[in-house]
Length: 250
Image (cartoon, rainbow, N blue to C red; front, side, top):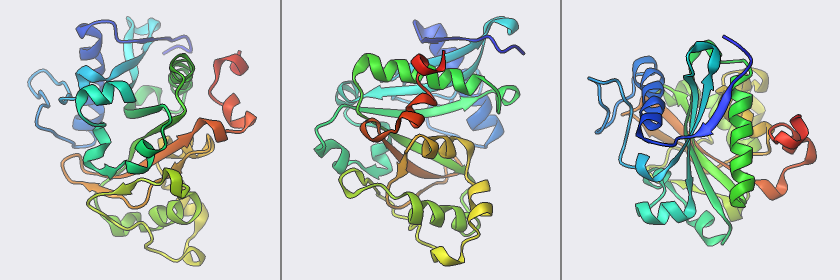
């Protein structure tokens, strides 16, 4: 494993299959998810939205250009072609649609286990930053997951997100099959322990100024409890912007 990576958007069906193969290893084999179009025989995690998304891939040249990180990116114009955003099955996105701003939905972010906690995620963020700048994106959003569906076990972390990181009303999406995140009074939360149990991807969004929608969605098919993260690029501080923009990273 090296610190040198290549980052690019999928150029053909072979690239998309490479992304779907990593997604299978993470979301199906590792985390126990499933779905109507998951191809278990060929070990591909896929769904009907894949043709509308751009797929961002991170490859490791030191391991035969193996795909070690992926992101799915759906612009609002492509969502209109698809008929909806992917996360609209879980969340009412009326607030975002009414904003009149340029939207980008993020999803299926994952890294190969050997590359977690290393520079591969940083390269994925850099690729995302370039995409945001190229397309004039103003608001990023998407669901991110806690592993498991035992809400009682997740209650301190979900409650901390609700009390400390709830989105402003003008960007506050709401879960459709509503699972309250206001489960533990703020004064009773062990904030350090609760934040330790928040998945790394969600913490990364929070560090960049992200916030969460109202309510969680319990996804039994994927064995996850989802929250919807929203990030307004106009409200990012210079320090936050420096965390993922290439101009300041080089």
